[in-house]
Length: 335
Image 1 (tube, rainbow, N blue to C red):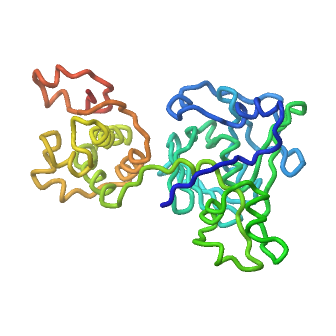
Image 2 (image 1 turned 90 degrees about the vertical axis):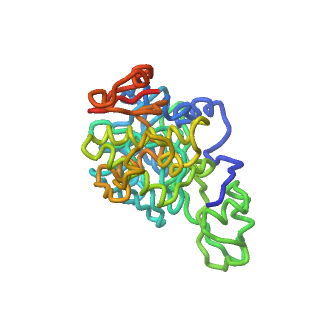
Image 3 (image 1 turned 135 degrees about the vertical axis):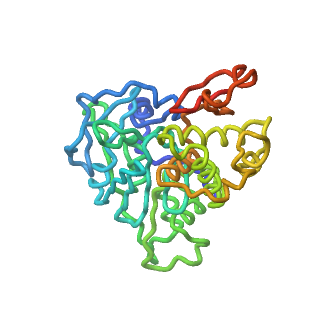
């Protein structure tokens, strides 16, 4: 995947109201911090779509002065479709432009077409609805947003595709919408301007989230992590499985341990199944596959934990010397 650098955010005119936009429209801090913030209904704030005030089926929410919107309602507003997957706790949005977007509950990663990118805030569930920052939602739906302070309205504008002609070329689209040539080429899956012919319709909104590409992982790494999680905690709850997967990933990030998933699993004595043949025979169930994927996508419920054990089985000076992080099911997670 290519790294996209965004030079200009096209969200409206520069004005005094921009200060409030930066707060309301989600110039957010780290997702882990945002998750703990209080959520409340946004009073006296409306949304307009192409100049017309619209009513959503679900309320707008505020989290530390940032405006969050229900993903499904906003997708519908732009003519898209949202599908909920209860097993994986995910919403998949198909836009009218053919883009595919996948959000997971409390997952800091969004799947956008073929790429994975880090979100500024965690999508979260409220009253059975998934919520996302308005600005990020709008950009992913190929729209712009600005804040009208006097009317207390967040103004969404659906941006039409740029139609290339003899009178309006690629360079004109670049100049009008404020992105670099390379950004627009990549947004449209094109390698060069030479492949653009008259009549071509180009996407001209480059979501700012594309600046922050997520660290990739391979299918082999995913399945190895899932198999280890299955054999160590297949009988545990999803939360317990997520914890086990994250112990492996926490070790990968720690300089005291090997730097890859494979090397962490096959080194040392923390994971006996890697040495007695059980790992090779492991067949991950659905819950484990979800836990492994969510862990690889940044959901961590055992921050800092480098070990786990069953206190009823594993006892001794070493285990008692560790600092406990949390106990989930039969496992104590520690560092």
